[in-house]
Length: 321
Ligand SMILES: NC(=O)c1ccc[n+]([C@@H]2O[C@H](COP(=O)([O-])OP(=O)(O)OC[C@H]3O[C@@H](n4cnc5c(N)ncnc54)[C@H](OP(=O)(O)O)[C@@H]3O)[C@@H](O)[C@H]2O)c1
Image (cartoon, rainbow, N blue to C red):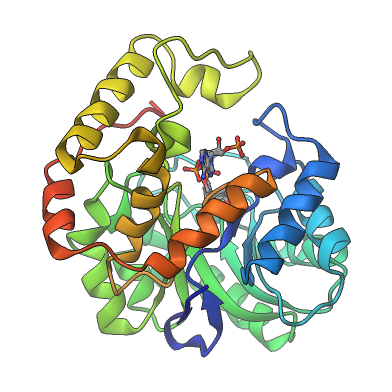
């Protein structure tokens, strides 16, 4: 396992981290707690020391599983997130922060996360959605100051809205933010345009989420794949989307002359080919996936030639709409 420094924090984190949304069981159907715990422990055994969770993942269930797996082990770096009070993640410009992150509520959520995690302090607390109007908002600045002064939070992060990487450019220039979390993968290359250079300039850590485009870039979603109702992928991959995904994935495999089974490794190494990236956090609910994803770390970044080829597979769309 290779390690990178998370921006200016001095935290040395595994460049393959663990995305803990799926094990929280909300919106993902099919997780089994025993298997999830085994996958968390397998991750640690393979050198993964960075775990990304959120209060919203199963109403604290994901945080509690991480607590169950690791207790107070200080080698484990944990990032969680404050959910919007109105549970609206897609926020338009101009929305007042009080409708999403009122100060009292944020501080209550922080205490709830700490209780779920069984810790007095969390390494990184992220705001689970964001618009840049809030970057200079007095309420937000005072909330962040209170979080840090309380000693309950070491570092502050922002999780950018899906496919809107530039919506945080003002936020990272405030000096208050230590990391951002953003969708970046072979299809959505948009953070490479402005966000990654800005993060390098300000020495902000970058946590890459959804490296497999919710499974599309693992190559296992075929036109016949079915997701149960209640699983968000039933909607996310609805209609002609599975066929579309399959065609794009076939094109990548042909262009790189690789077997579809190798695609997950290439998808992770694509993200790791950008020095701005601190860690990539695939969701992995079983130890088999943990093992193969962790192995991608030691294979390192892709060659510039392969990255150039993959740039031709940029695919701009938003399945959340
Ligand atoms: N801030 C936010 O708003 C936000 C939003 C989304 C995600 N996130 C974070 O980002 C993390 C990653 O995103 P994600 O979990 O949604 O999607 P993802 O990482 O793009 O894809 C996860 C899917 O890939 C499968 N998979 C993982 N490794 C595999 C392998 N080696 N071979 C084949 N399949 C493999 C998983 O299988 P299984 O189903 O078997 O596990 C799962 O179905 C989340 O867990 C969460 O921590 C944050």
